[in-house]
Image 1 (cartoon, one colour):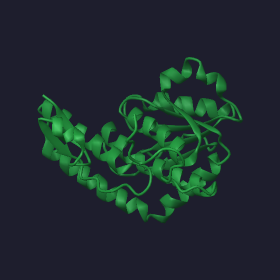
Image 2 (cartoon, helix red, strand yellow):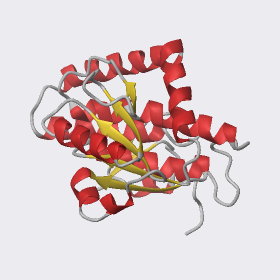
Image 3 (cartoon, one colour):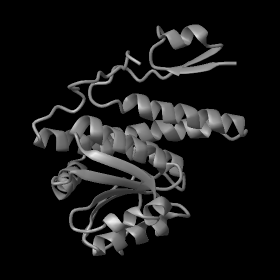
Image 4 (cartoon, helix red, strand yellow):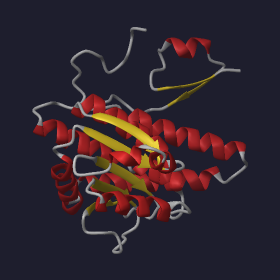
Length: 238
């Protein structure tokens, strides 16, 4: 049994599928963020359905989150944070994306779009994996973006972020919880979006600041994020 998840109902994938679940993400105008977030949301709905959880409640939470993210796009303080974070990491030639659990999905997406949109080399790693070797890269020429939602592994990531910032690394934290205990040397972007303890929803929400960072970084390099030199927005060649 084949289930197709696609944003294009005319795609060849649909022809071979027993069930098609459209994303309804519309056309992408920058890096592919809408299709990514809609795919995450759809997969989350499927997983909750399979485990017998309340899908209607999740649907309402996803709708509320979409409205909150729209508000952030015109929130001047939030935009100023994005600009500040961009300045903080503007000299980076390489960026680590560090996360745990569901937020790793956003970490991998962030690493991809920084390569595509801002022409910056990246690597996404779980926090534990970063400790097993890459920690040696910490220092004044090292840059890292942490995705840290509320949850059981929050303190582990916060401790790691503070540790490498003390070693000289430039650290940006994207989080959904204001934490005044974090060192001033760490740049925080806070998504106060009332996500509760659902780390899966944070994974969706954190894509917004990542996308805005890419657009701002690209603009400072004279690049239009989403306009490719060698690839194409939809890959048609294997």
